[in-house]
Length: 490
Image (cartoon, rainbow, N blue to C red; front, top):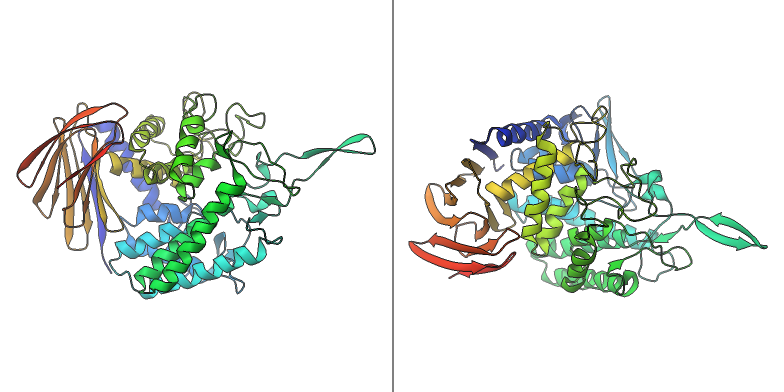
């Protein structure tokens, strides 16, 4: 098996302590489950979840690919005959017990797919097993959760959601009967976040089919994925409000404005224009989601918003973990820098990784009960490697060149026989592979190459225009970059 490892050092003592604390939380969340070692949601936990543990396992893969792969395989091996994937696995004695409760919020398909690339074995038994399991899960979703066959997936109760019974997204309906007012359940609810998840499953199946040399099946899965994306646009998107909304059992709009609109970007289920409208009108709206500590679970000006309920109000660490990929997919690199800086400040004061943060102050909440939540630590590590590190995304190598104000750093990623290194000092970052310099670039950027260091692309990762110099292949390139703007170096 391919071996991976990461080493990060910096003269910024606070950042160094934060990194080591986050890394320790991540590695301490590996637990024995019978003859397997799996990723859990917190050190000392005996539960692995399909929505949060596998998200953290993707981060873990840079340090311990074997446990990351086992964490995926454990879920693949416990899929039900009807295609339902377990939402969690618990350890009881020497046994692994699957539980089939939550349906939405699975952060699984694309995360598992990326391990195929990291393992450098795309057409493998792992890839085949993943393809078979996701195919069965897709069949389960459309057989069991589209009972009216209108192409929109349904959930039947709050407990189907990742927020569970505490969810504030689905208020009771107020209705009149015999001249008197009464309340009724909105369920079954047709929900866009389950649709987005279904899109990701099909899109992942298309990519897996290509890896397994099944081009006809890849084309079929892609057309099915595109149909789901179009249905989201046709049925859930309200152009006048620049967002998606769920619908109750009558087909009426549920007006709750939720951070799950950002999950649409995480799963890649919105077209570029709609994604831009969500970000500009809602995510970056200071009255809704761009609060002092951004990304609360519900818009801060909603009546259902509850600052004391972590599932109906304050920003969650897991939301930050998802937001990184959500913004990345749509090219919002400067926004990643902004939220990443907020996250590092909020966690770095006491080196704690809570479930959620105060919306106004950014202070960690409820640390007396949970101060080492793995998805939050995972988000911190993902931010650090995007700012100053190096990592792979399929066949692309991504180099963080944000720079430091008064510090230096070195981030070393070992991937099999290859070593990728970023060195940051004096307002510049140098990237090298196996000791061979690939580029030197002005701070404030991110650089993308292939695994050999060619096909160089430079992006402005700051919210301000940037005059940038990049030295590559013994040539110097000068460029002016607007925020998020990318330029290829030929």
